[in-house]
Image 1 (cartoon, one colour):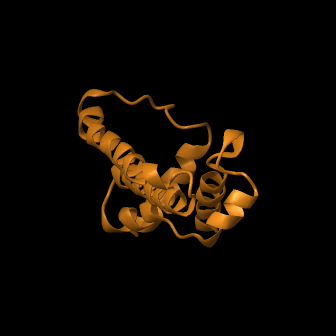
Image 2 (cartoon, helix red, strand yellow):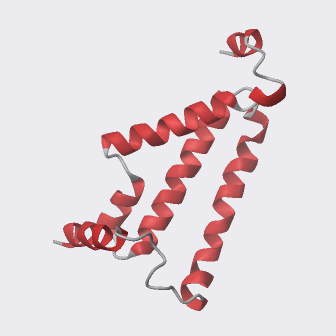
Image 3 (tube, one colour):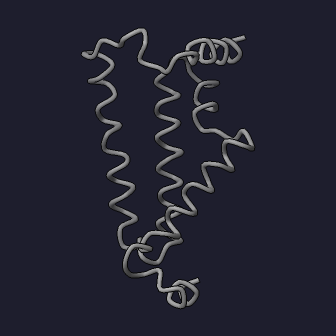
Length: 123
């Protein structure tokens, strides 16, 4: 793969990180279309929206890790990408305790879908 990247001159200029972006988004699309979802798994094992948030973050970090390891231009940044993705999780307890959520914090129409989704996991 490294020689292909060198051949296409992806290591320099504006195409640096191309493989990262390609792999990262492909992993997310495959997850959406196959129904494989860490946040759904966490919702089944616990109650609440926090499981969904943490699951989405973990899935994103895993996609970042895989993509950064496959992209020769991003390999040296893999650990920083993962740690940078994990660190904001420490904000969740603070945000849950001190930030008042608006009833309209989710896009219009999503409330019903989320309620239906949560009910299907508790039944």
